[in-house]
Every structure is written in structure tokens, then in C-alpha cells.
Length: 269
Image (cartoon, rainbow, N blue to C red):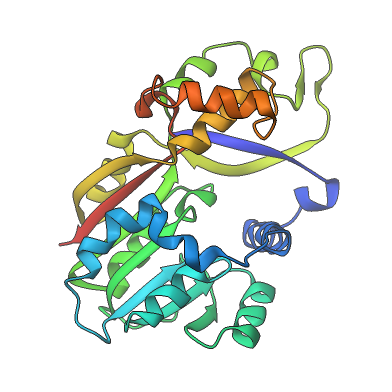
């Protein structure tokens, strides 16, 4: 497992982890255009992997969207007849969802310590949330196990410690960390942002926290290629040259080398 850090202001550097995570994601969601997100769900890698499992659940089954963000997945699966709760640490984001969404039940809360009863949910999914706590994935995984029914499936995506990252991390820090100067050190305060995991590391996290791993796959390959183009080649991905590079690189680069995320499917035992 590999730690990622982000530059922060002096005021952000002294916030508690919970307060920092809430504030960070509140700002992120305020800057995202959510107009067509629900319509895009069926094209997403996560949907294609998760839907065969959810299709076996009865209408009205309880499903948790942990770290729901802008709530599009909660809205979508509520429209399909499931009893979905969208949970997010950002109180401001949840308040907006309650005011604007006709479908879905939204609650503010921390995925490490929820208010739900034991064995409450039939399924639980979470995209890009479990990795944002410096103590690791243990706390959200243990809480997921507590609130899932025995045999219930957990679906999570986390950043992938892919082949590109493994090669990059062998180089001197100043060559790849834009926040670091080899003469003067870090230019600003930094703090922990997320963990990146290999496939075996995600499997280990599942298994030591009471889950049986069903499968782990790479996703978000195109997003990973965009990062190669921007960070390694210093080409703007949305430029004409960037678009050509993406078209050429997609069939050539293996997913295990470049994919941005992995998705894990696990079953509570």
C-alpha cells in the first residue's frame, strides 16, 4: 500500500482528519457539474461489474451507497426498486441532495462509524471512499461487515498502485512530486490524501476483515491514460494532440500498467 499526499493551506493542515475529509469533498462536489451523471451510470465500469449481483436481489432490498457524493448512484438504484441510502461525510452536500432529489434517502455520516443496525443491508457499494483515512481501510471494512447481512456483497473501488506508479516511485522524489523541490523541500504544508493498493493488497484487506474475495479487476483505464499524457508527457489531454495520444495509447498500454482504479467484489462470511 502506498500513501499519496496533497499540498494544503496552513489552516487545513491543523484540521482533524474527519473535518479535513468533509471540507475537501464539500469543495470538490461544489465544483462538479452533475447534470447528466445519472444517464451515464450504465456506461460505467462499476455498473457493469456490480449489476449482475444486484439483479439477483429482490425489489425493496436495502442497499448502501457509502460516500455517495453527488448522489447519482443512489438516485439510479432507487429508481430500480431498491431501498437505497446515500451516505456521505459532507453535510452540506447531503443537505443539497435532500432538497433537490425526489428519489433516494440521503444521510450525513462517516463510513467508519454509521448509525445502522447490525446485519441491516443486503448490499453495499462505495466508489473511491475507503482509501481516504490514514489508519487504512480496516475501519470502514469492519463497519461494512457489521451492517451487511451474512452473504451480502460489498463493492468498493480504490486507487490502483499500477505498473506506472511502481516505476515512478523508484525515481528520486523531486522528479515526480511537483510539490517537492530538491533544494528547499516542500513548498507548502502537505497532508495525507489517500492510499493506493495493488490487487493482492486489496484482497488481503478484504480477507483479514471478515470478507471472502469474489474478484478484483482494473477499471478506469482511460482515466489512467489521461494522467500519463498530462503528468508524464506534459500534454493537455483535452487538446487535439492529447486526443490523438489517447487513441493511440489505449490499445497499446496494458490495464495493469496504467488503469487508475481497481474494483473489488467481496462477500460477508
